[in-house]
Length: 242
Image (cartoon, rainbow, N blue to C red):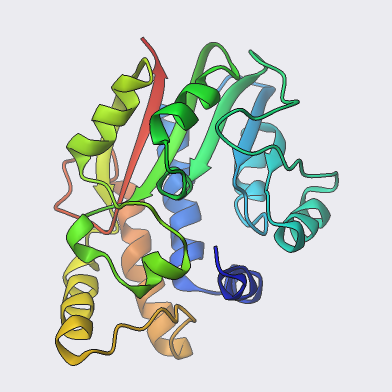
């Protein structure tokens, strides 16, 4: 990702509505459907500044990987131990068959060969282990945000399932999320194209609006995986070996 993306993440990951509500949604989803064993070993790949690590730590002992040095330093401070730098898809030096859960939260879209990356993650799982995957949805929503984040693609549900199955895995509880705010996000992307003002700035809005967006997004924590959601900005699923 461009340096500015990591800098914004470090500045806003504790206050921005998207990060805050998303952590709660993913936590509830994992609690309901992850069947994570007590004392689980968990690995987050592409942890960025480490803002998801405390949430994942509720489920077990967490390790992490991040290839950006500055973000890795921040994440290591948050985790209280060194964060690794092994790149996908080979993940050199990471022990195979070690983890009950691997989390890749807005990571797979950064990897050119997503199938190879998923195979590499699968090799790290213990028997019964799972991969928690979140990705951006809808290729037609491609914008400057995707460019500065060095995305290779945004996913359809079918496209994500295809990659998961090609890696020898199966998908469970696949669903859209960030659906309540999707009309607003879609309108903003379309307006940006029409006006030529496709802006990659994802800094938080004014505090009242930030609080409103957070409250609306967080409402989905009660629905994700339980009921079919309308198209959303993102997709989440659990993947496990067949």
